[in-house]
Amino acid sequence: MPKPSAPISKSPVAESKTKPMPQKMLDSATNQKEIKAHINPSDLPKVSVITVVYNGSDHIIQTMDSVINQTYPYIEYILIDGASSDNTRSIIESKITHLAPTIKLDNTKKDNPNNTIKSYYLEASYITSHKRIDFKFLSEPDSGIYDAMNKGIDLASGEWCNFMNCGDRFYANDTIYELFMRFLMMQKGGGSYKPEIAVIYGDTQILYDKNHAKILYAAPHHKKNAHKYHHRFIHQSAFIATQTLRYHKYDTHFKIAGDTELFTKLYNQHKPFLHIPVVVAIFNTEGVSAQLSIRMFQEDCKIGFRYNPLFPLFHTLRYIFWVIPRTCVRNLIPKKFRAKARILFGKHHH
Image (tube, rainbow, N blue to C red):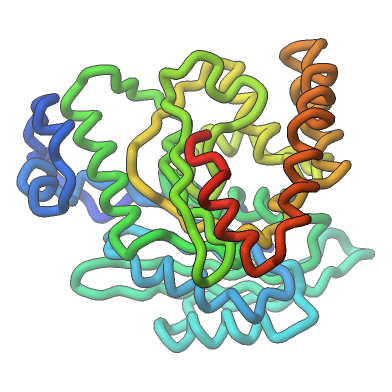
């Protein structure tokens, strides 16, 4: 595996020409034409999008296309493959090399003289007149999803990191652009904006199947105890400050709730969170943490106990009287009606 990346700046920009944004305009600006009139695109930060995959040949192209088709001008796209046994690696390699010439290729990793782990790594850049995407692709064995995500952090050089894992995708081609334009408007417009924001998050479309989906609105950042015991937004719809991630990586002891562990830790350390009302990601409910499991319950209890010794008791009661009965009722509904029922009767706000 290559050495961790140092932050790489965009092409030098002289003095920012972005005009201050009045709060009234900030609240009403809902399309790119209004945004472009008040924000200089050269002020946009470089972002790192990280995709973790293992045996994802059926879905990886869909996820990659949602990143590559973004209109955002400065993207670093990092793909971490856990040495898939299907043709995932060749699909990713083919997609990247079709778009851009390979800059760097390394097929061996040596941890120490007595242990050599087979590894595949390449870098490439896709550059047009409107945007630049720098690819970094690493394929090697890992110890789980959060180990793989930490490898992505080590490679990241953008100011913000998003984890758009295989099977999930961005909601629209201009999603990142709209999110960070709004972020810059908040930054320039003052108000409640804090310059040391650690996590920016938006809303999510929950995809049950190809015909059924709904928007899940994240909890406002100003809501009391919004993320004290669990993050009230979908992980894929968050951008985390890379500097924060380098200091607070994912705890690999967790197999399902590592994202909850990270976000609750940051929240309880009073790191600022910012909700921006933009639908960021489409979350496929077939993901690793989308199903109810004993392991998820245990990991949630372990995390909540850190911030309230009584949390496991309250969480157990919630499972007995709400989560388990709800899941049983859901499973009794015929499969062809189940997704529609989840849309009609499920929650729409975190």
